[in-house]
Image 1 (cartoon, rainbow, N blue to C red):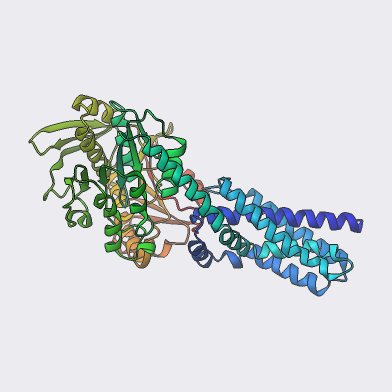
Image 2 (image 1 turned 120 degrees about the vertical axis):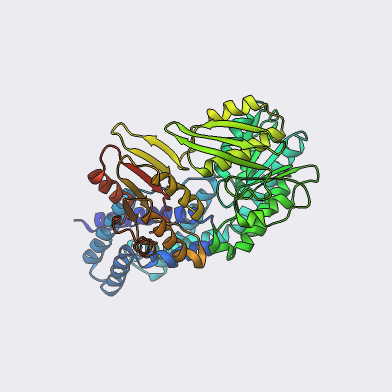
Length: 527
């Protein structure tokens, strides 16, 4: 092959390889909320910096440096290595692919500016510098994580300025709507489902808008206000998430809710919160922000929600199982082939019977919170009952469906947690028509209790399932040891590396009448 053609081929392939890896790096940075500390934690846990692909490329870079006079040899090595890496990167499928937001485009542009600056060093090598460029591009690929970190760090002042402008614009919009009723929803789990249920019920009487998807950060709320809110909206349902103390207060300072729902205080995100006391303190930032004429709706089924006094505002406590000090309780819960029936007891002695297509005690709890707020806002009982009966299941949150082949699928794949996973396994345990199969990688972000809680999860699987398909290696040892501790030798444990492997396994073992529970689906940042 002509040397010029080989040089161009090697350079193009190495640049494609670097570009593909840059996109993957930014995807992982996006999944870590653009926080450099979390991204570095992922790097240390995943071992991505020393992956086989990177190590092979590093060897190629060293070889080219050692035998630089053998142009054909090292250009061929660079071209082949870049081609193999590029094909692997471009063919890889991700559960949560990169979303090309304006911020992502700015980060990618900055990474390329830094990369080209580094590659330009080749110019100072003197005559023949162009021959070194393909190897320099490959070297950039090997150290691409550092370019992602540097780009995010350098762009911080720009991002902060942009965010301040968006924040002020959201404040202006809210100030122009003084009659808007704002309802805040937070909790360790259950907040997204509760948001959807409340939205459906309130639509019976009010023009309502809610934060879409998982837009539960300050910037997500700002985006909702700027892009989704209309001047004629009457109610704004604002989901509030938190990864550290102060996150919820920051959102409250923007939207000023008058009603607050606290769905749960539990062992979620302990990796960042460190203790359940910090989780409690942060979740109650919503309740503490409410005005004196507002209302707090608190789930007393959770100890760390029930034991926190609320003195600044009227509080309506509700419960499915722990009746102490609760104004609203669920009674006579019955699961039917079409869903669930239950009776909600109100403080005035009123008993209201509801029917829903939803299943699981957690969904009864979430519905109760939504119903309490709807009653407070004056929605007629008949309209509430109609809405509850017609609420659609929220995707990936204890969503049940039946396949044409007679397989029942329970989809609880979103953000598994100790309480929610136990409730999902209870639903699985009640299915006795065939094999009960759970597919799970376990639970994450539980800090020092990660292994302990996943062992408890395994013990629960032992009494709820016939087959356990454990996906990945992140929690495998803890879950399997928990299953062994559960004392049920009849549970068949199957270990696979990916969800694709799990699907192939299911295809070979499922028969009509079986039930499959998908419990959690870890993002690409976990193996």
